[in-house]
Length: 138
Image (tube, rainbow, N blue to C red; front, side):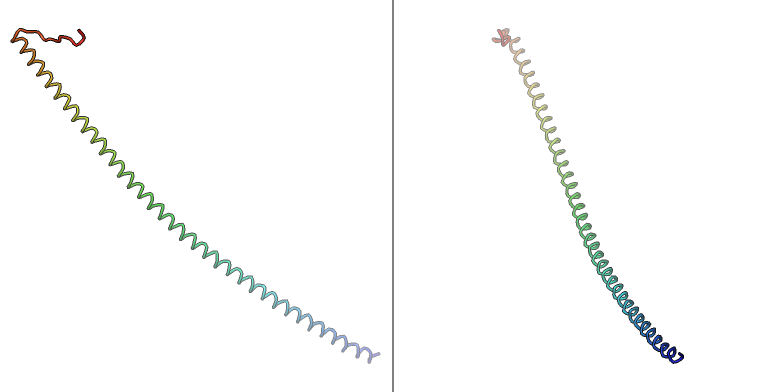
């Protein structure tokens, strides 16, 4: 019996040892797989972060360029608006000046017509004759 027990112990210890070695090998393999997985995930994360950073930089660059173009266009429009406003003010001033000139011409013509009428009336009075056309409607 002691021989049989002694023979069974080394067999059991050998089986246990093989099982422990197999378990250690499995754990080692799983540990390597987990390390590889984490490495790949880290690479993917870094790659995505790099691309996202590039996209953000591109976006900021394009936004800045577009905003600069917008400011430039707004400045040009303000300048054109000011120029056009000045042009219209000048036109208004020209119209006013021309109207004043026409008024002055009419006032001068009225004065000339008054003088002519007074001179003609004085001539009629001096000669004692009456005008041929007293009123245009008779």
